[in-house]
Image (spheres, one colour):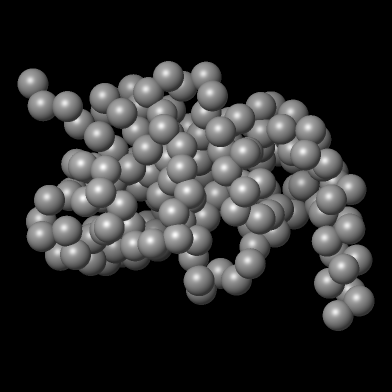
Length: 175
C-alpha cells in the first residue's frame, strides 16, 4: 500500500478551529499531513508574524501525531515536489469557494507535472461560519473562543495575547 502524504496550506492568520478540524479530518485519512503556512503576498503582512502563526499552528496541532507543521515563502508546487506530497487537502465553506479551489487545483496539477491531486473537504457545520477574518475580529474583541481552539488561545496568551495586538494597532496609528 502506498504511503500518502497530504498538504494543508493556508496563511493561518490565525489558525482557526475550522483549520484544525480540516487538519484533523485529513490526518484521519492520510498517513502524514503537512500543515504549512504559505506567505501570501496578496494579503500583506497580516495580523500575526509568520513566526507567531507557526507557534499557534504547532500548539493547535500538537495532539495530532501524524501532522508536520512548517512555514514556506515559496510556491506550493515547489513544496509538493520537495516533500513528496501526493494530495492537497483543502476545505471549503460554501459553493463560492469551490470554483476558486478547482482553479488552484488545476494550477498546482500543472505546476507539478500532474503529480498531485486536490481533495476538497466541506466545512463541518459548526465551523462553516469561521474564517480567519472572523477569528481576528474575535481576538481583537476578546472573544477568541468563538473561533480558535483552546490550545491556540493558551499559546496566544503565552505569547502576549491581546496586549500584543493592541500594541501593534497603536504602532499602526502612529504611522
